[in-house]
Length: 337
Image (cartoon, rainbow, N blue to C red):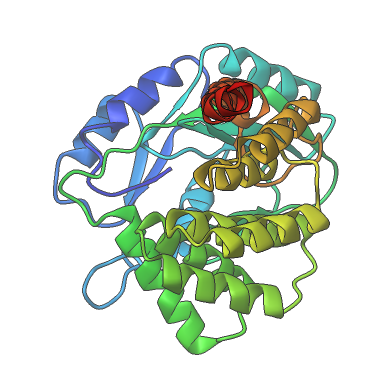
């Protein structure tokens, strides 16, 4: 683990791991609260590492800090987790099972935040070739066989009170990366995400568009970029632009119910319930997220959300039919006279 000013949530995280770990390695990047005291209460091996920070003491390189924690470890297998996350019940037993089997080099687990989920390799064998890369949105460079176990779930429960907000921090780091390399595709994509989350939709669209223009080969990320452009236009009430971006995302990969729902939402906003109904029905036809999905998945888009929106469409269509009947009634009376 790497931590900074996490005294409020660290205990919650470590209690969720009770009985799982043989060794708890925590690197602190500059806490001003009692984070280290909490860590030591749980028997952690701790270290303070500041080389990952900038001159103002703000973190600038997450991978550097993660590798410092990795260097602190001696176990055969590594589970990495953040202080504002918890391992859901049942996960510890499955992790132990994978470690005992020792048949692969890493395990992708299911990460969850609110309604979103995504796979991420959080469990891996300690190996000199396994190192963290990326100043932000860091990941492990893995070798060998990687399997997936979506029944191991880590849930994100963020609490940024009294700290630099994650969005503000991420925009700062990503902007610095793009100053160094304006054609950094991953940074453009992630900066688009952060700007969208901050409600800076025009800036987000510009970053996503630059990313798409680079022709990045990652199909899943290209679909998400086009989808998020549509989201930004929808939130700005630019209906035609939202439809164009939504259809672009569908051309990249039509298997994601999220985009079907988004197009339905545009038609709903345009008071075209018949077209909206068609897209909510096609969202339900997706049935489940693609097995090879790599990005955020909104599970509600495959069931609960389109069903609720379909009920709204039916009410809107019924109201339109009633209005048409009322408009037609006087004409019939005039003909009768």
